[in-house]
Image (cartoon, rainbow, N blue to C red; front, side, top):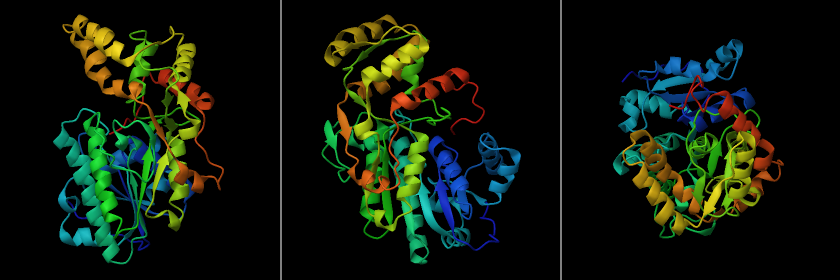
Length: 389
């Protein structure tokens, strides 16, 4: 592994992990635009998609004109490395030099694939977090570290029901997939290190594209059910039209993170970056989709009836059709729990900070048409130039 390049500017920098992913790149864009005197260092691997510098250039040029791209690149240092490797794959000298130049860490890197084998998901989400926490200890030992912002997920709640508080974690819950389980395990590590490190935890709910432009580089989670519904492939789902669905746009997440992390008194706390009291319902969201895409209304079924009859019948009917089976069963089953659960996220901690700035999660009624239109304009991501890595 190549050593980190020598930094000419000794000013401390913010290390961002996952900057080539959907949320990480949006965090980078926000901080570049809003904090003109801040420098950044990114851990980026080179791969078949290009060198770290080529990947960074594509991410920036997807949002900005050439002039701003070049200006922003001057404030970013790239370090070849991987959070799943010990010391990021660096030699001791390069690692210690990096630790002596970073005063803030934003850890957003994660595998968001629901069906990764458990050990594979653990390598990224748990071991990767442990590697970052070890690095934070090195920064802290040098007396330079101000804070570590860890991006988790509200769905560490797993199969719980009812109201989930920000300061709760282990309530004996089980998990719907390896993503939830390994993010739970990772947050457990983070909470253990809070005794010695200036850590803050953020738990977003379901993240969608930008509320103003609809832009996204990730067409997973909510987008897949929307796609098969908009194309008339499927319109029967388990659940209740009155059930809450907690969705937040990525620009809200980035702005909320920026505001909360600007205050020292937020260290040692956990914040739900969720819609919570402003969350919509399944009935409202599906009606908006039906109206926008000109689709037939969604049919809601009792979850037990759905799983024992409709889902079973579809599973048997398409078992010999590989493409349909993969779409409706293999992929579809990943999202079924999120139609059937009954969860609400308390965001008292977050509101206590955000209310001073007037920021609140936007209502889906105010921005979902932008999300829908972006799906149409990009043919559900096929025409997005820089997709999530």
